[in-house]
Length: 142
Image (cartoon, rainbow, N blue to C red; front, side):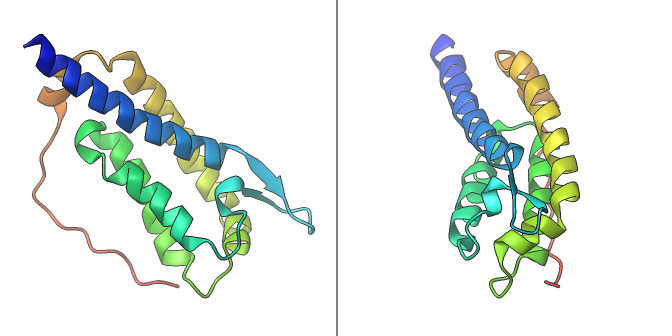
């Protein structure tokens, strides 16, 4: 049984490491030539693939994340998907959505910290985990 708990804990630590990398990319602000801030994640204007890869790496770990943390990360994904289409520059998207992304980042950081304090409580984690069988479509892009 200890091997099982160690495996689960290792997977959770890996998943929360991915969340921490995402937090770092949206925790660092960059100031544009027009003096408007945006987050480092959006500093390469045409690198949509890197942004989606980072989000995909985190979202693929849903089983190992708390439900509310995953939901906040999904909200970030929906915001980026719906407003940062391939024709739009990521820098401008980051500037236009700096506050909304900052609010999501604050929630994600808070939940990340809360979860890290109880990461070792494997049994209670799985008891709280809700396995929903539903589909939520993405909104249309702006």
